[in-house]
Image (spheres, rainbow, N blue to C red):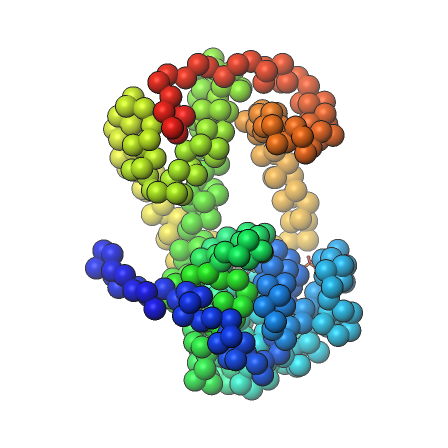
Length: 384
Ligand SMILES: NC(=O)c1ccc[n+]([C@@H]2O[C@H](COP(=O)([O-])OP(=O)(O)OC[C@H]3O[C@@H](n4cnc5c(N)ncnc54)[C@H](OP(=O)(O)O)[C@@H]3O)[C@@H](O)[C@H]2O)c1
């Protein structure tokens, strides 16, 4: 296994070469794996396990995702079930992949039915770490393990089909059988992990909740919005503001960060862009530091998860959520974003009807989208 040390911390990464498929199949040969939930993660993880030759069945309530599972080859009454407690009784490893609030609601259909010596698996530390709020406390005679892909279910499946694996965290919370770690890694490779980094349930959930509220999702929308609104207030056109805020980042610069890191992206931009980025990044870091500190505190105190659980248990939450998402969609930044995205050559070929629809929907701003983006200065490889 590969080990490395950065910042005085030694870490080990488990790779597929450490656990080839033959070894994984051997470890899991007597296991009956149940995946509860056919949402993004449940679907991806169960399909990958099945394609890897594991003995796997899925369970979802009867709705659109149940129908999808049937379409994807799961056999009703055999490998596709709708009764959680009956399904759990049959399984030796249970992947509990309902949404985190539903894990709390449905625990009475899962916990009491786990067989002694079985393993309960999560893809998030939420239910276990915040057990005072969720009531998810597994019996002492079961293994409690975690494998959390660092990406959406769609990416888990996509990378698996491409023959690549996704980065995952893994952890053991309770080792009742003495085999918990081995089971965890084997299932992790089975669901499509390429690289498994060891952690604890608590560290996984704290970092994950901070990350998605921070730079992965919440902060990025906030920063995009602040810059876009400023540019618009200073008289820049919607297309210009969008290109300088979102499109150039997602299409040109962020992939370069992903390839070789921030300094490489900086060094592949113009001298002007580099100088500015180097001078301004510390000011942004200083400005947002207090927000990140309060975010971590909200997560660690449990107030953030209490809020998530309270929202998700409100009967009108689904409708309110739709309204909140529609409000983001209707922001001018994302309306012009639709038009700019549809200009991409591959979209024009593949999505002709969608182009027409988008243009009609945002007719009022459409003419401005056709305005030429401002001329670039000395453009180098990254476009800056
Ligand atoms: N999304 C990510 O990027 C990501 C990454 C790593 C780990 N995880 C973790 O993986 C787990 C599953 O996440 P996900 O991305 O698949 O999506 P999710 O939206 O968190 O969960 C979807 C699943 O929950 C079920 N569900 C929701 N409410 C339910 C209820 N009241 N009763 C029964 N079932 C209910 C859905 O069933 P229906 O089909 O019937 O609605 C679906 O099967 C979570 O613990 C999440 O934190 C997510």
